[in-house]
Image (tube, helix red, strand yellow):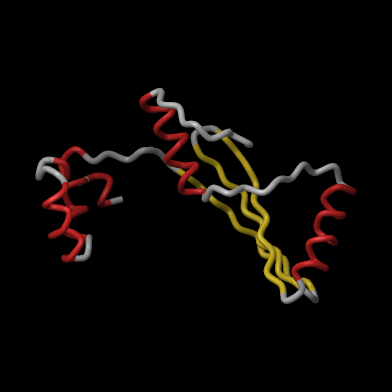
Length: 124
């Protein structure tokens, strides 16, 4: 929270090489103009099963709620079929998401604050 309350403190928290490099790229007053873009909340649930680990994330940002499922396993082909079958059997819509949570956070935040739109589709 200290960074948000005092944006100029951000430069004291950055690694010195990055800050020195950034002085050549950005004007000095940039550090006083930095403001939070928004808030993202993620709740992760871990489900341990004999042949795999499920990581289920519930994410909320800018009034949107979505879920992500990650699977850790030594048997990806077998488990992929099992998971897809389980999701279909429970009428849960799913699709691959190539963008990270952070990239979606930036996209939605810029859309909300500045009305900017981007050229990639929104699957959520």
